[in-house]
Length: 493
Image (cartoon, rainbow, N blue to C red; front, side):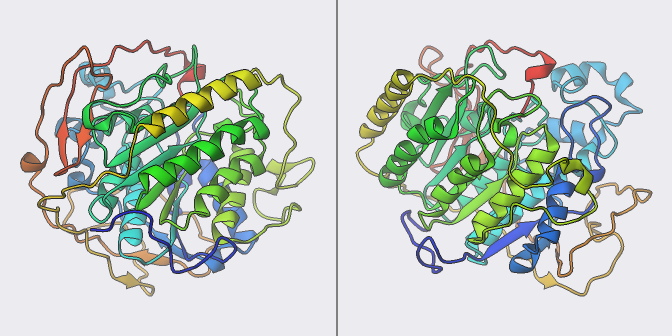
């Protein structure tokens, strides 16, 4: 097991990193429904930009292995996973009670291929973690992942399966400490909740707070028990710009890296914090957003980059394309190359867009108070925790790379009982050099032995669920009282 603070072999910040990129050409076909703001098509648009900017040739490109049931059940409840697997638009009227129980049906609709979609995006994030564990790359990227609201037993905020929690659990097999950073405009509640009582995972979320979904993420919520001060929340107001954002981000994350010394970092890059987002209210430029990626990359620690929210899809594609360039250490031209989605980017056809002149409601005094309080919390962590890691779960074996495989349905697993939609037509891929991962050989894990449920004192606990990772067992402290506004225009990752 590796402790934190290690440097990557690729050297100082200016040097290029070895990057593994996960993409399934079918991901853009999934459709939440008419009028729904979450559009997986944005992942396909991002990929097209990467292809035409010539960035794909500088990365290892992998098609993710779909996450199988037992992988999803490392975090999620068995009955919830079984429900996601069985529900279809045709059968949902017969399962109204289950839909309500698992919070599926409105903001998290049932759509064709829902379970396959979950397997795909989760497979990319877990696959990225496996590549980092096996030192195949310095940085792994899965823009289809980052669905941070999903809970152990329910969907939330357009998210069904929490790929981030699953990826962190994979990283914890090799690294004593993992840092999770969330720059989506919404609080990363599902991830915070999962790791609220452990000191092996630190979660730091920068988000809009106050009458905004999911309603959690108060600066006073800092973790519980062994996890106290290992959950940090940075509550922000409307209109925050690049300068104000980094007045907080850089000092806080610099101190986190110094004190916590993570062995690996997971950065959720939700693009709904950009200026002009259809459902957001921040005023970050693409360069300001990407500066978070650049800064976390500069610490030379294995890094997993994930997507998240983002509802003005032309700007989401712009942002994640530019941030892929940042990961590679390559600058990309502002002038956009001709490609199949070129008309989305008119009238300027540029990569960058100017922020608006909206009011920044984050006063300097507010920012100073937030920074001071969070740095005070961090001062109470004397040093990186020394973890006794007992009975490490078996490694997920690195799949063999098969570059010549031409099976039309490469995602079919003969040992899986997953139903494959043979009628779904694959999208012609523009990838010149794409590697297909074979099935990840994951030894069976005794779920009962790794999932012990306990109750903590309800008066102290502020989390609905948490994972105590000392021996990778799951605890369930008292229930957190939350006020959640479930208006559709705020139900976002």
